[in-house]
Length: 110
Image (cartoon, one colour):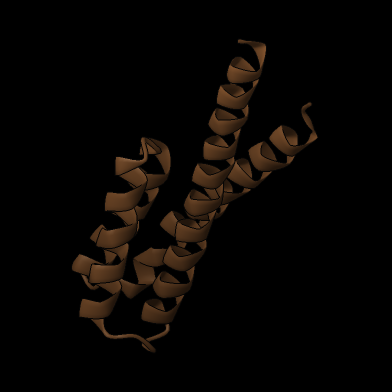
C-alpha cells in the first residue's frame, strides 16, 4: 500500500514537472514569435496561429495566468500594433521567470 501511495506521489510530481516544462516552453515560443512578428520577420497569420495554439494549450493545462499573458500578445498581433508589443512581452518574461523559479524550487524539494 505504501509503495502505491509513493508511486502515485511520484507520478503526480512528474506530471507537475512536465506541466511546468510545457508552460515554460510555450512561453519561450510565444516570446520568440512575438519578437519576430514585432520586428516584421514573421507573417501575422503565423504569429496569430502560434499564439492561439500556445494560449489554448496553456489554458487546457490549467495555467490561466500564462494563457492570459499569451492572449494579450495575440490581441496585439490581431490589432497589428507592433509598437504595443513591449508591455505584454515584459509581462510574459515575468510570468516565465515565475514558472522557472517554481520549477527550481520544486526540483530542490524532496
